[in-house]
Image 1 (cartoon, rainbow, N blue to C red):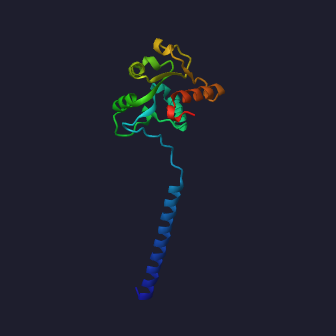
Image 2 (cartoon, one colour; image 1 turned 60 degrees about the vertical axis):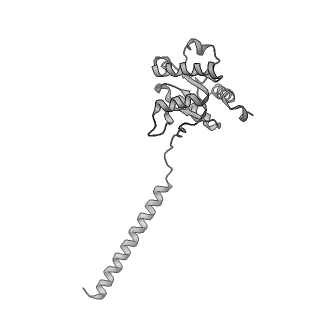
Length: 183
Protein backbone atom coordinates (compact mmCIF):
# COMPACT_ATOMS: atom_id res chain seq x y z
CA UNK A 1 0.00 0.00 0.00
CA UNK A 2 1.46 3.29 -1.10
CA UNK A 3 1.41 6.61 0.76
CA UNK A 4 -1.59 7.92 -1.22
CA UNK A 5 -3.65 4.80 -0.53
CA UNK A 6 -2.56 4.89 3.10
CA UNK A 7 -3.71 8.54 3.30
CA UNK A 8 -7.11 7.58 1.82
CA UNK A 9 -7.52 4.75 4.35
CA UNK A 10 -6.62 7.06 7.24
CA UNK A 11 -9.00 9.71 5.92
CA UNK A 12 -11.81 7.14 5.66
CA UNK A 13 -11.11 5.86 9.19
CA UNK A 14 -11.13 9.44 10.48
CA UNK A 15 -14.46 10.14 8.76
CA UNK A 16 -16.04 6.97 10.17
CA UNK A 17 -14.73 7.82 13.65
CA UNK A 18 -16.20 11.32 13.40
CA UNK A 19 -19.60 9.95 12.30
CA UNK A 20 -19.63 7.33 15.09
CA UNK A 21 -18.63 9.98 17.64
CA UNK A 22 -21.45 12.27 16.46
CA UNK A 23 -24.02 9.44 16.60
CA UNK A 24 -22.92 8.48 20.10
CA UNK A 25 -23.08 12.11 21.21
CA UNK A 26 -26.55 12.61 19.65
CA UNK A 27 -27.87 9.38 21.20
CA UNK A 28 -26.49 10.44 24.57
CA UNK A 29 -28.31 13.75 24.30
CA UNK A 30 -31.54 12.04 23.29
CA UNK A 31 -31.38 9.79 26.34
CA UNK A 32 -30.76 12.75 28.63
CA UNK A 33 -33.74 14.66 27.18
CA UNK A 34 -36.23 11.97 28.04
CA UNK A 35 -38.39 12.77 31.01
CA UNK A 36 -37.32 10.56 33.89
CA UNK A 37 -39.90 8.31 35.52
CA UNK A 38 -41.43 9.96 38.59
CA UNK A 39 -39.52 9.01 41.72
CA UNK A 40 -41.44 8.99 44.98
CA UNK A 41 -40.06 11.40 47.54
CA UNK A 42 -37.76 9.78 50.05
CA UNK A 43 -38.52 10.32 53.71
CA UNK A 44 -35.85 12.07 55.73
CA UNK A 45 -34.24 9.50 58.04
CA UNK A 46 -34.57 10.79 61.57
CA UNK A 47 -36.44 13.91 60.41
CA UNK A 48 -39.49 15.42 62.03
CA UNK A 49 -42.81 15.41 60.25
CA UNK A 50 -46.08 17.29 60.33
CA UNK A 51 -47.98 14.09 59.53
CA UNK A 52 -47.41 10.35 60.00
CA UNK A 53 -49.75 8.28 57.80
CA UNK A 54 -50.58 4.75 58.91
CA UNK A 55 -52.18 2.44 56.34
CA UNK A 56 -52.41 -1.17 55.22
CA UNK A 57 -50.79 -2.41 52.05
CA UNK A 58 -54.27 -2.70 50.50
CA UNK A 59 -54.78 1.03 51.08
CA UNK A 60 -51.38 2.05 49.72
CA UNK A 61 -52.82 3.86 46.70
CA UNK A 62 -55.21 5.98 48.77
CA UNK A 63 -52.45 6.68 51.31
CA UNK A 64 -49.97 7.70 48.64
CA UNK A 65 -52.51 10.03 46.99
CA UNK A 66 -53.27 11.59 50.37
CA UNK A 67 -49.56 11.95 51.21
CA UNK A 68 -48.79 13.54 47.84
CA UNK A 69 -51.63 16.02 48.24
CA UNK A 70 -50.46 16.94 51.76
CA UNK A 71 -46.89 17.42 50.51
CA UNK A 72 -48.21 19.66 47.74
CA UNK A 73 -49.67 21.82 50.52
CA UNK A 74 -46.19 22.20 52.00
CA UNK A 75 -46.53 19.66 54.80
CA UNK A 76 -43.73 17.28 55.79
CA UNK A 77 -45.26 13.81 55.45
CA UNK A 78 -44.03 10.39 56.55
CA UNK A 79 -45.26 7.52 54.39
CA UNK A 80 -43.66 4.09 54.79
CA UNK A 81 -43.70 3.62 51.00
CA UNK A 82 -41.23 6.48 50.73
CA UNK A 83 -38.57 4.98 53.03
CA UNK A 84 -35.30 5.01 51.14
CA UNK A 85 -33.22 1.97 50.18
CA UNK A 86 -30.96 0.55 52.86
CA UNK A 87 -33.06 1.81 55.77
CA UNK A 88 -34.88 -0.42 58.26
CA UNK A 89 -38.62 0.13 57.85
CA UNK A 90 -39.65 -0.60 61.44
CA UNK A 91 -36.96 1.71 62.87
CA UNK A 92 -37.85 4.52 60.45
CA UNK A 93 -41.55 4.17 61.29
CA UNK A 94 -40.83 4.27 65.01
CA UNK A 95 -38.61 7.35 64.72
CA UNK A 96 -41.15 9.10 62.48
CA UNK A 97 -44.01 8.28 64.81
CA UNK A 98 -42.03 9.70 67.73
CA UNK A 99 -41.28 12.98 65.89
CA UNK A 100 -44.55 13.55 64.01
CA UNK A 101 -46.91 16.26 65.20
CA UNK A 102 -50.00 14.48 63.86
CA UNK A 103 -51.04 10.92 63.12
CA UNK A 104 -53.48 9.87 60.41
CA UNK A 105 -54.82 6.34 60.12
CA UNK A 106 -56.41 5.35 56.82
CA UNK A 107 -59.47 3.22 57.63
CA UNK A 108 -60.92 0.64 55.26
CA UNK A 109 -62.30 -2.86 55.65
CA UNK A 110 -58.78 -4.29 56.00
CA UNK A 111 -57.35 -1.82 58.51
CA UNK A 112 -57.95 -3.45 61.86
CA UNK A 113 -57.19 -6.95 60.52
CA UNK A 114 -53.52 -6.05 60.19
CA UNK A 115 -51.53 -6.62 63.43
CA UNK A 116 -48.90 -4.02 62.52
CA UNK A 117 -51.59 -1.40 61.94
CA UNK A 118 -53.23 -2.26 65.27
CA UNK A 119 -49.86 -1.55 66.90
CA UNK A 120 -49.58 1.78 65.05
CA UNK A 121 -53.16 2.61 66.09
CA UNK A 122 -52.27 1.98 69.74
CA UNK A 123 -49.10 4.07 69.42
CA UNK A 124 -50.98 6.92 67.74
CA UNK A 125 -53.54 6.94 70.56
CA UNK A 126 -50.80 6.83 73.19
CA UNK A 127 -49.16 9.87 71.55
CA UNK A 128 -52.44 11.78 71.82
CA UNK A 129 -52.67 11.14 75.56
CA UNK A 130 -49.03 11.69 76.45
CA UNK A 131 -47.98 14.48 74.14
CA UNK A 132 -50.97 16.45 73.00
CA UNK A 133 -50.60 15.22 69.43
CA UNK A 134 -53.55 14.99 67.08
CA UNK A 135 -54.91 11.67 65.80
CA UNK A 136 -57.22 11.83 62.79
CA UNK A 137 -59.14 8.83 61.40
CA UNK A 138 -59.31 9.01 57.59
CA UNK A 139 -62.16 7.10 55.95
CA UNK A 140 -61.49 5.68 52.48
CA UNK A 141 -64.32 3.10 52.64
CA UNK A 142 -67.59 2.69 54.51
CA UNK A 143 -66.40 1.08 57.72
CA UNK A 144 -67.27 1.12 61.40
CA UNK A 145 -64.47 2.76 63.33
CA UNK A 146 -63.07 1.15 66.49
CA UNK A 147 -64.19 2.85 69.74
CA UNK A 148 -61.26 5.21 70.32
CA UNK A 149 -61.24 6.32 66.69
CA UNK A 150 -65.03 6.68 66.70
CA UNK A 151 -64.92 9.42 69.35
CA UNK A 152 -62.82 11.60 67.04
CA UNK A 153 -64.14 13.51 64.05
CA UNK A 154 -62.96 11.58 60.98
CA UNK A 155 -62.01 13.00 57.61
CA UNK A 156 -64.15 11.56 54.82
CA UNK A 157 -62.07 10.80 51.72
CA UNK A 158 -64.35 8.07 50.34
CA UNK A 159 -65.12 9.84 47.07
CA UNK A 160 -61.88 10.95 45.34
CA UNK A 161 -62.38 13.69 42.79
CA UNK A 162 -65.59 14.98 44.35
CA UNK A 163 -66.15 18.40 45.86
CA UNK A 164 -66.70 16.73 49.24
CA UNK A 165 -63.27 15.07 49.01
CA UNK A 166 -61.61 18.41 48.24
CA UNK A 167 -63.44 20.13 51.12
CA UNK A 168 -62.46 17.35 53.52
CA UNK A 169 -58.86 17.49 52.37
CA UNK A 170 -58.75 21.27 52.86
CA UNK A 171 -60.17 20.83 56.38
CA UNK A 172 -57.52 18.20 57.12
CA UNK A 173 -54.72 20.46 55.86
CA UNK A 174 -55.90 23.28 58.15
CA UNK A 175 -56.05 20.88 61.10
CA UNK A 176 -52.53 19.47 60.71
CA UNK A 177 -50.69 22.55 59.42
CA UNK A 178 -48.18 23.81 61.99
CA UNK A 179 -49.54 26.87 63.81
CA UNK A 180 -46.71 29.10 62.57
CA UNK A 181 -47.71 28.23 58.98
CA UNK A 182 -51.47 28.72 59.45
CA UNK A 183 -53.04 31.37 57.30
